[in-house]
Image (cartoon, rainbow, N blue to C red; front, side):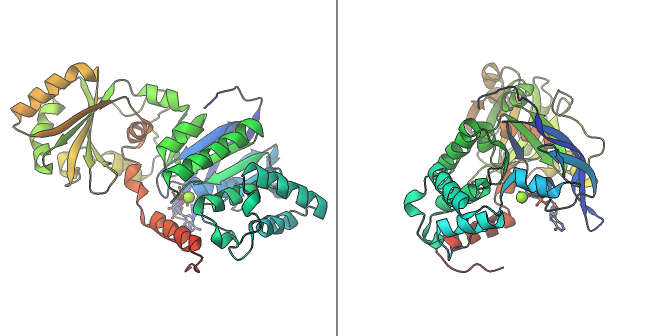
Amino acid sequence: MTEEVPAFNIIEVHALTKVFNHEIRAVDGVTFNVGKGEILGFLGPNGAGKTTTLNMLSTLLKPTSGNATVNGHRIDEEPDEVRRSVGYVFQDPTLDIELTGRENLDFHGRLYHLNRTLRRQRIEEMLDIVQLQERADDLVKTYSGGMKRRLEIARGLLHHPEVLFLDEPTLGLDPQTRRSIWEHIHYLNQEKEVTIILTTHYTEEADYLCGRILIIDFGKIVALDTPQALKAQLKGDVVSLTFESAAMIPRIHPLLEKKNWIRRINAVSNTTNQSSIGNMMHTNQPTAGSPGIRNDPHRTKSATSTVKQTNMTNHPPTAKQLNLLVDDGGHRIPNIVKLADEAAVVLESVELHKPTLDDVFISATGRNLRDQRGSFMDMIRRHRIMRQARGRPTPG
Ligand SMILES: Nc1ncnc2c1ncn2[C@@H]1O[C@H](COP(=O)(O)OP(=O)(O)OP(=O)(O)O)[C@@H](O)[C@H]1O
Ligand SMILES: [Mg+2]
């Protein structure tokens, strides 16, 4: 949103790495800074290393190597000072639903050794910020999902941290509630001057809220810049072609591949409600190399093999759609329709749009974030949130 030059770096991270069980490089040498007053978004698919990074920065996990300072304190040497500087809203709900909202906050205040008077004062202040005063004395199990998330944000702020970590703040919430949480986050940043790192796999959320976005994949930073700059690096337009059937794609693909004004072709499957771009099929220019998006020579084997899925046999069998990155897309549409005629394929629709962060993510990683949204872990988390909303005990 609004961009201001930060006064100083409140977080500095150098080559931070976490390896689990000697084999899973969950976070693989990440280096970045966060300016005071920034909202930095970690955008990445399931398992990218977002939560692990936050856990190290909040001292809940010890890094395997590398280091970081938070609010001037080293995470390895001054964990107590770091913890006092940080508020953390965890990815998975951690409220006690058998207590009231106020009791949950009070309990947290005691953990931070706030005295009775200060606790009362802060609780009122936080309830006011997240607009939960009227429901403060109701049991949390009667709250909606959005109210619970707001209460968790209030709890994370109770000790007046300089920095707030929000791990998937709107996962599982409906679009309207998501918007309202966005407004709260924006308010905290703008009016209360809280520096925020939030993780998300919703590109719209990152685009709307974050001054800069760090794209993380397989534990590595693959891009870091403002949303505008990231999108501007993908010069051209995206033309989406939907065909009558998936079988038509192999017929038109060789013709499209020959055109040098088409810079990239992505197969898109529509097996779920949300369309998902599948494997990259072909590119006429390197995916990386432009500022902010880099080829990483240390990328893990699995990441490389995913990015290099460039031939037709790898395209999702259900794909009925191709997304083309095209120079001057508007003028090229007649040429594309002509190619469809030559290939004797039936086009159901042709759409033109400017590159979005979804397109940026594909460019940086060769995969689509949207594929990850309906993951098994997300399903479990949503299920948990819904069960909590109904006040039933959650398994596990
Ligand atoms: N305690 C652990 N032991 C072993 N492996 C772990 C542990 N915690 C995380 N991992 C692994 O580390 C990788 C990164 O996990 P992490 O939770 O940081 O990803 P994430 O980006 O937050 O994903 P999501 O979007 O699903 O929340 C994954 O492969 C995960 O399975
Ligand atoms: Mg996570």
